[in-house]
Image 1 (cartoon, rainbow, N blue to C red):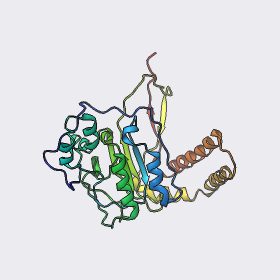
Image 2: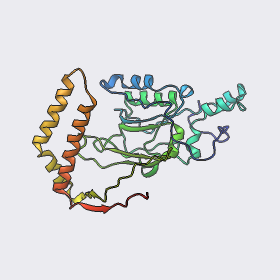
Image 3: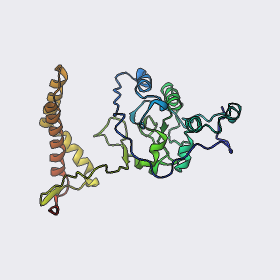
Image 4: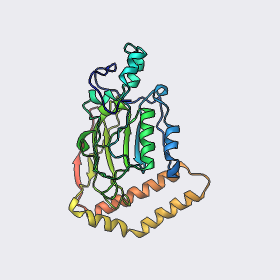
Length: 289
């Protein structure tokens, strides 16, 4: 295998026009990580191979993998294409040269990273998984993180990733590694990601209320917000007790989930009303009858 992309490599068949969002033929997959040692195997088993997939793959989370800037794809040896006379086989070429889709979307093949750590065992397994399943590490490739590869843990390492199928890169509208906020994690930076979407139907529910209340975030009051949140001990205790009760039971109903979600939402809302600026009222016009 050639370590670098060579000029003159046969080009994969191209589809013109913007990519459509994934269909619902492949339902979303959640991969709970209870044991980091088995995580790469869990991912490998949960994501079907590219030739068996009817949709695209998008996976985000803490993978505990340090990958440096090693390639997450394989460049096939051109001589093999000649020997097996694959130049006219569009299906095989599309599979072997899937990484060329990134170049067609003006995304860099080479990754960059602010992490200067050595690659760990999980990193090798993650890179191997990417090559086998034809998914790509998005960090340092799209939008505001392009050419950066900002650290995601303790300002030192990159272990939180967004993995994408090659054709999904064209649908990434926003990608950013946010500043660390202790309220949301112990050591990890949040990953902000927005995908473009296409409205598939016209059934839109309108809010017919005359006024909607919004509270604007004030970054200067961040510490006050966090302190007020932490000091809401009664509400936090109630939420933790409810979660503990659900955990110890054999079943969890939709009502249980709705109740806890409502409590958490109320806690954030009350904290915002207490610490941030006064509510702003936005008038909303009623939809035309």
